[in-house]
Image 1 (cartoon, rainbow, N blue to C red):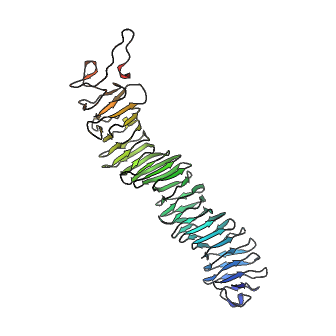
Image 2: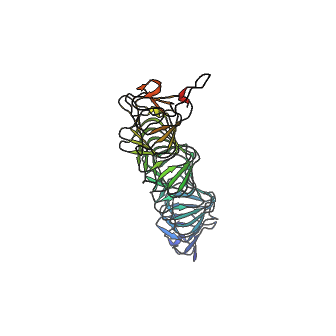
Image 3: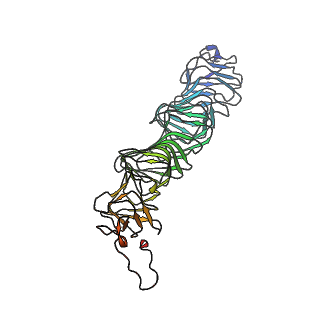
Length: 468
């Protein structure tokens, strides 16, 4: 390799007089700047194998792309101007020595090690698979993932501009939002920690894909337009609340786990998957408006409905294991089904006029109140297998009253604790329920509504039979 040294008079890259050797550098040459070297202007697309500005005190002007097939060393004493691109085309170590790079930076795959912390005023572009190691890079002109995966220990900080990418071009480095910036289109992140530190983050119309590998999100200081969690047997972690307009949960026949904090959804929850796929974990999902759509997947994470929400017609929302809570809002359930397939806890279900609720035979459902409806909307509560009972247990010993509901194949753990006020209610297959149209002594017309009745004690006061 030949060394090409910037002459004292400096000049344009493509001029022979600019170089002490009288030869314009090409790929394979090492560019060196001496203390006496003059200004250098990259006026045409140029290439070399390395650049060493350790002793440089003059000005580098970037008006075109400079491709370097190796290491780059800057120095704080030099001046960098222009908007041209520094393109690193091979494995390299690049060191800023505190100098901000004023133009764009493009990394063409391989391993790039940052010798210290970098700040880039222009756009950072990554192409193909790139390993970024050590320290950090602050991108004030945006980030563009053209393809492949970016991995490594280098912390990528987005301080301005726009982040663009694709579903397949994932960032796997530690990632921080540190200034006002925009997320646009499809971007992907996984296998590391993403943190909001500061700034107003605009995400309208964008989609964040959290895919393939376990991921940690700490972004409560911002609101995402859409976040899509995918994965097969993957565990993701939230170390602060995740605020999102549209949440998509997708998996195949395996399990995606999301642990920690709360996902606050303002627009819609969409669950995509196949039979056997499920989302679970300690994270609570809270929806304050919009739609819930389910297509084959089971939700086990705790779900809170706290706003006007529509359960999409003709869909079956399959839910189990977690706690399903109603807090506020109008819930529209026309044409939909709530399927409870394992032991589940339900809170304030009397406030939602469900269309149909099916409970898997043999399953125990714990409730604070029983389902209720309205004169024009009577929920049907039934076993998934007609004639085979499921069990309802209430969280306390107080009597419950249900209105405008049709229940079959239900067995209460506390006989007589539930009074159903619906005229002509379906009494088929139920055990331990009392009805409004009952004969004296709590026995329903045509069929007993309470089994295992109690016998009054020989002396003293008799207990309320609803407690037995």
